[in-house]
Length: 254
Image (cartoon, rainbow, N blue to C red; front, side, top):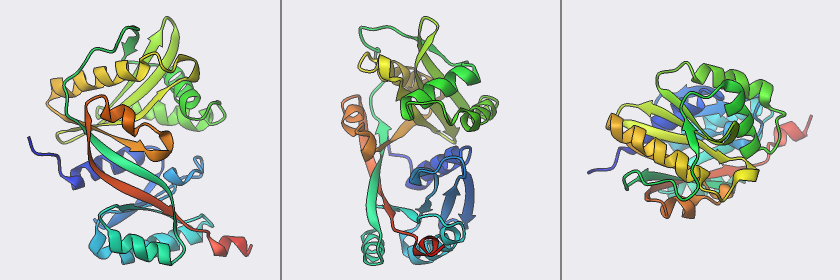
């Protein structure tokens, strides 16, 4: 079976993260994510979707970054080598790498440790586990909880949580677009790591995608160190993107 088009995969990603950050589009050339609540570069970045017109997209994005005194971060496909070289020449440095992977194996058992996987979590339980897994604290709960409440109302979204008794051990989100099931926010709370939580969640996500006739894919950030884990569990690499940032000299003058 042929792999999904890169354009369809990128649209799924853009639509998912637009639930978490404001998304401004430059036609089909790219888009800019920005967030006052989540300050890390991942939620404040420009995504180039067309290598051929990348320079115009970068210029447009930089104007937005500088207007808000934000350090510019650009996501560019690895295949856009000329664009990457020009960005580096203008002061950008690599801060991360994002790899897109497609599930190429059927659903598999979760392993020796069994968890209850729930597809109807409460906003509070999912939020708490998400923040515990990715931030190790609950400071952002007032910002994340309203997002989760909205997501739970969308037909395109399924939020999964793995639980041990009454305690949520991990979370995963599925976002649907035509023919695709994008997997996001795969996280395990620290005290339940290395017990097969993510495996149980991925098994359930694969089963849901198979039942709906959708191709399941996900993304792995190099900073998370999860790429090898996914490759060992039946995913294959489709393509990669670099996250490049540079200092905002305009902001430093204030």
